[in-house]
Length: 324
Figure 1 (cartoon, rainbow, N blue to C red):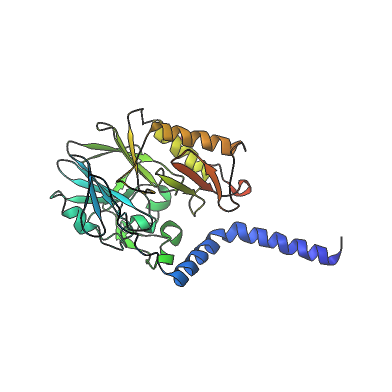
Figure 2: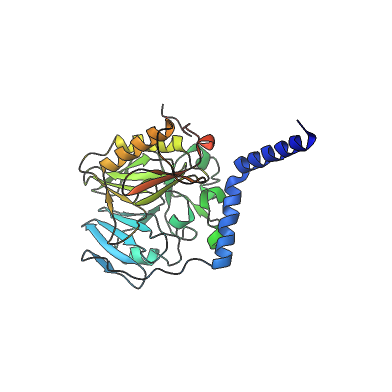
């Protein structure tokens, strides 16, 4: 082997190692550059949202899923976020809050006189309302989060937040309530079970209302591309999260996610979509699933969802917190 070839192979190996170690940082720099050159995407045009949806203003929409559940949509924001106001008799939960480019708190407070607890499905910037500007915040109780909270004050990391490309600062906030996975949250006459659904991030949770048979899935499942290639993402966690959902849903469960692709209103997924995700994950793990792209690799799930993941040689199939 020639000296020149040896040097070339070493350089290539270092480049591959660099890609493995710093791929997230490179991706973040790329996102920042794209936004700095083109700016944050313009608002989408307002479209017909159907008879069940009411425009709150020129940005937010309101959809009453039932008498105690309200979807607050952002159909003009390029990610088309959907947050959920879940009402009990004594208090309410706002599950997710968008990026905060338009403040959601006054919208939610205008829909109920109940005290509102904000619960993020996870800590990405497009779910925490630009710095979590809420009086009472409840977050999932996991070792890597609780260990950093000094006197219940928590500062997010860039890997958890990812808001730098759109100009959002890392928030510090006070945790009023810690939500242990598998336990219930009592709103007064309405109980929500906290389901640990990692995969998109290690801190992702879903909320399940067994009595109403409604599941709020955050970014774990929604209509569109599911991201499993970001910091704190892994296919092993996604596999675990899908199992946790399959343990609670049934054929009549309505699943509401945090994003959509097109109107009208908040799309509904179901148990068959959870099964499709599980089947896709099994095929990916066994090397049997068809793919598109190089990074991220895009795997089909069904007509409503695709799964965007790292290529096989980078995939991690271990769960962050294995079930006991």
